[in-house]
Amino acid sequence: MPTNRARAKANPTPAVPVRKLTEDTMWSLWRAFALLAAMELDVFTRIKSGKRTAREIAQDAGANEAAMARLLDTMIALGYLRRVKDRYSLEPIADACLARGSDLYMDGAAMIARGLTMGWLQLTEVVRTGKPAVRENPEARAREFFPLLVRSLFPANYVAARAAAASLARERRHQIANVLDVAAGSGAWSLPFAERFPKARVTVLDFPEVTPIAREYAEKHGVADRYEFVEGNLREADFGRERYDLVILGHIVHSEGPEWGRRLVEKSAAALRKGGTLMIAEMVPNDTRTGPAPEMLFSLNMLIHTPEGDVFTMSDYRKWLRAAGLRNVKTLKTPAAPSPLILASK
Ligand SMILES: C[S@@+](CC[C@H](N)C(=O)[O-])C[C@H]1O[C@@H](n2cnc3c(N)ncnc32)[C@H](O)[C@@H]1O
Image (cartoon, rainbow, N blue to C red):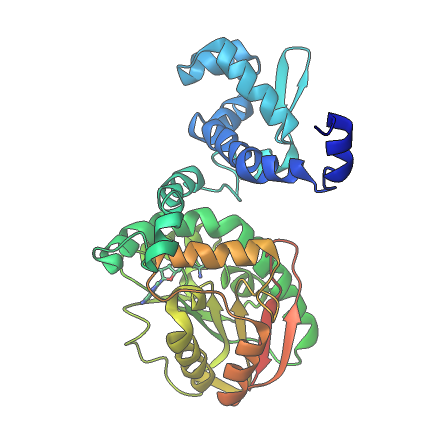
């Protein structure tokens, strides 16, 4: 009989980072759920409005004080709160994005994350069958979902768009006068252009359930008088020809799939004036589709929730852009978007 020591020598423990598995199977989920609970209990807004101790915050939220203290201390560990003795305060990111009323408030993000989680719990079955988790009437469900989703996307996309508008303002010799924001949602991608280019007029195209949200944000940003709202389905809508200096495809190609992704690029290119710019904001994986992780996880998110959606590589986009007659394809890194923005000119 071999001794334990001899057995260990014959089968040495492989030097694999086992802890990564614990993190990937449990802790990364727990991080998200802890933050969701804090958002659903609105602890960040309560702290901003002056409730500072676990007792005050718990009373205000109708929650248990000891349990609340544990959640709040975990929020310190995750980088969202600070505490001096028993008094909590907000880290800058929580102050800017997680307390109601702030300009970059991630409105509805917890509800969206909870909704998407229901789909993610079915991923094993989705991979077995190759069919999305949401099967019955996906368009009707999307129309209910988008008005919530676009508010939660606003902060990250607006911050990224501000960087893009600054970059285009530096580069371009002429003004941007006409902008088409396709599938605009809150208008997060076009608002910074309307703010930076005082003559710019923006046409928003989206479902009728969503354009009132773009109007609301345009009003909040003081540019609604230069916004026009077109309601309809982007697959049927006429984008026009040679009409715009800037066409924006902000996080729409991924849900349209490869055929309509390509056609959207084509329609957008036709709608540009000579010298105009197409700006695509998307999750773009590397050309071998092996990373980065957020982009590949997003491709699974599309597999779960859409019949055709996916992420597309820079090679795919270059091919589509070239075929649509666009040139000078460039990428622009911004602080808030995971993948760089894609810019091409006519
Ligand atoms: C992921 S959101 C992106 C919103 C915004 N562009 C952003 O990046 O913040 C997708 C948007 O596309 C709109 N949309 C999706 N399919 C559409 C279609 N077939 N016709 C018009 N709008 C559509 C949705 O209503 C939603 O506003």
